[in-house]
Image 1 (cartoon, rainbow, N blue to C red):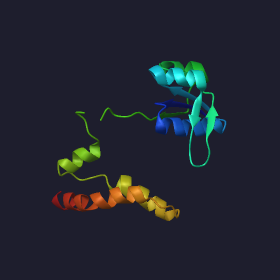
Image 2 (tube, rainbow, N blue to C red):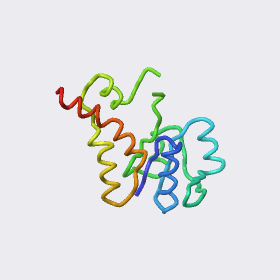
Image 3 (spheres, rainbow, N blue to C red):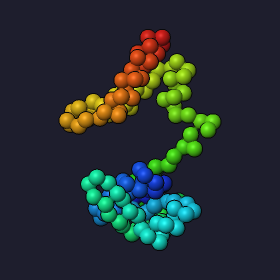
Image 4 (cartoon, rainbow, N blue to C red):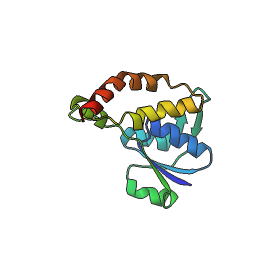
Length: 141
C-alpha cells in the first residue's frame, strides 16, 4: 500500500512511522525545520512498545508525493488546527446548544473499547462530561 502522511508530527509521525516500519510505502509532507530533520535523520518513533528509526521520503509539496512513492492508496491527514479564532465542531455545537455528535464520536470509541476489553479512561471522561449537555440538546430539538 502507498500512503501519504500530511503532517509528520505526533500522530502522523507515529502512525506513518509504524506503517513504514511494517513495509508499507509511506511518504511524509512536512515543512521547514521538521522536513529538514526528517531528511537528515529519518523519523524516530518513541513509544512504550519500543523506539525505532526509519528513513522516509519527505517533501514540503503534497503534489510531489506521487513522484516519491507513486499514486497513493491512502492519505493520513494529521495536521493541527492553529485552533485562535476557530474551534472544533463539537465545541461550536456545545456552545450554541445544538445536538452533539457525542454518540457517533466519543460514544462509539467508548463502546468499541468496551467491546474489545480495552480501557478508554480519557475518552470516557470526555464522553461522561459531555453526556448531560448532549441529552439536554436532544430534548430541545
